[in-house]
Amino acid sequence: MSQRDVAVIAADGDLVLVVGHEKGRIRISSALLANASAVFKAIFNHVKFRDFLRKQQDGGGPIELILDQDGYCSMKQLCRMAHLKHDDLMKVFDAEKLFHLALHIDKYKCSSSLKLQSAALLYSWVNSSAVDEARVSQDDRWRIVTASYLMDCPQAYKTATQKLITETTGNLRSEYMDDLPVSVGVAIAERRSSAWQYFCYELPKLGIPVCKSNCRREARTQRYMLALHEAFGLLYWPPKFKEGSRPLSYWIEKTRGLRDIITACDKACQPERVKESQFQDLAASVSRRCEGLCLECSKKEAPNLDKKCTVHATHR
Image: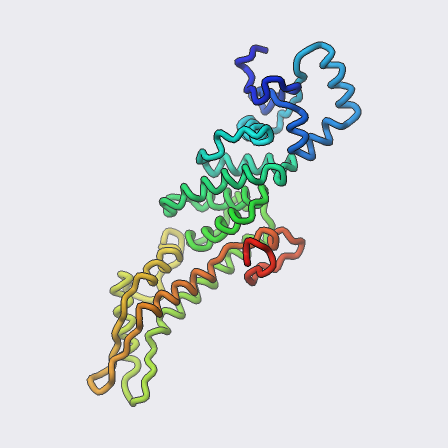
């Protein structure tokens, strides 16, 4: 085996991992890997493995451990993180790579020891995707939610679940949610639906006049709705909320940007004004209903995700 055929993470490492069907080789320190992974620690401390290690080391050079069910790229990144190789933590990994890395971190019980590095990788993706949210696929959003869950990163999980609520429309189903509890998908769908229904009801409600005179209230409300239709470029209310239509984030921002709308029913009645501040307050209220999920609550055996968490640090 030549040196160039091996990805050297620890130059003096006593172990070479032979990973995947392609048999990619990664030279590492068994002590550092065991320090990061409870699974590898158990393997390396097993009597039979220690006997095997002793016999192989008598022949000189590192021994090989075959991991043919793992992915080479994910395992290599996990080992780099376990060996505190931080030079690539500011890179933006794509959602698929982060998802598969998370599966390996979960498999080998590394989430606690690698939490800071995992969070850095997830935040890089979240910040990068924020530049153009519309280009991010729903599958990628689920990949990041699952990765945040398996890597045990509460803030990234909260942000990723919030984006699923505010940046998606239509069916939320994805194959990449299968590693999550069913309750997580249900809670996200319910929060999105609740926020949408609240928005569709409360925005028209602002235009219902409070008038003591015997006037045509319907005419005043109609003028307000016509003004909304013009501002939003709509022909009817409520807007469509199916796959391919505008997500909640779009309607929140449009509402936040509305200016005063003056309504009047006839010449005998004093005009009323729906103020810009009322639209901004409504947009803020809808946004609060779109808050992401609490990771600690999501991991409970019987989670109650219907209400905002007031217990854990990331949700106070």
